[in-house]
Length: 205
Length: 338
Image 1 (cartoon, rainbow over the protein chains, first blue to last red):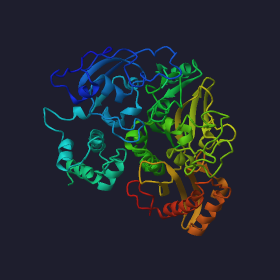
Image 2 (image 1 turned 120 degrees about the vertical axis):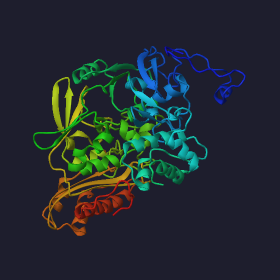
Image 3 (image 1 turned 180 degrees about the horizontal axis):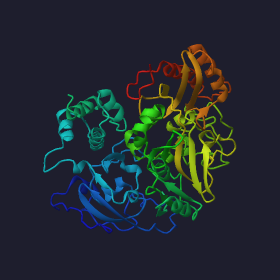
Image 4 (image 1 turned 180 degrees about the vertical axis):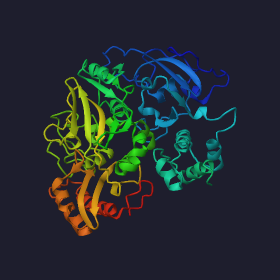
């Protein structure tokens, strides 16, 4: 792990996580140049010298990280590949699906279209940071109550987006919720339940 | 994505100095379009100059009674700004008609003006595209061109400019303030974006090394009679087939001044003084609006899959002018077209 001041939380080798089982090995330290998926795809310009690593300080779910990053690292890849916070999902990786939505300084953004170096000093909240002391965030509970997902892949993005929506305070009606949640696509079509879950938290159910 | 050097600019002079060091450098603000294009290998900057620290985040009134919008004001912050909501509601409406809230939270005012086309061939590096690779040909002519231009296109390019915000800025007579190696200057919004001609690789008239610092609005905001009507394939989070921004000044039933511009139909927001002249002094009714629409569309030309956009544009213009005249602007959350 390059320049990250806290290690990955190791899993018990006898009980590997799903992610570790898929990878076929326990987490191994990353080396410079392999730090992001982008960096692992050399193009015709591979002859250009590796971009220099850039120091970046970010607070993720209340925890401070002093990092040195390839500038091509998106916040999404930083979360998933460097910090092992895989709750944030990579759907389209093009800003079209919303699965990667996180809160950046309180505002919802698409983490796939953002280089981490651009947000030195920022605070990021992901799906992993919403529950407090083992108690689900009201939106997480509402999504359970209303069966607001089927496959669940879009759900972390939906919930982070809904948290941003409620903080914005602009949506009052179901119609306005639908419009302001349109950046989050659900291919299972759980939209009515998602709107109902959000309305529950807004106290309008 | 190719490697790039990352440089952080602290002020405008710093940004202008940094961009001049590498002819293949690009500024990055929100990154919502540029980073996508970099992933697709369409944009290949060797240096990225991060301008997010620049002090260009204010929205403030001007002595002339207008508004000055810093280039780094985020789209959401602009649409929700009290001065914009109260004095330029057509701008707030157009911004909220574009993209998603996540993207609007990232995208900047200056960056919105600099969006590249969403033509699929521009994005697909395996196909010829004169905008991406001058001289290679246009794949959209004779290809899939349902979303493409019906006005102002050339034999080199039939791509459209995708911004909604810029369509509202067109009818507000916005001015774009820029700074470059040879100082600052002001570009009228009508002169900012270009038609493709035989140089479709140039979207706008910014010179090399210039940076947008602000967008200035004159006082006239069309508070009472305005609309932004966007017609698209789904009700939200999609680019326009046709959009219409309208601002009217009425004297009873008579149009004192009428402005309207179209999005999604050309390489720039399409505004036509001759079409607006048709409105002036005339009764604000469907017959007048239809004559104005016909005037604006007099040279419209369709391609294999997009000829429907000509009639769609005509109907959208009449509908939008009617909405504005009635004082019932299109809601961007209720999708019912009034």
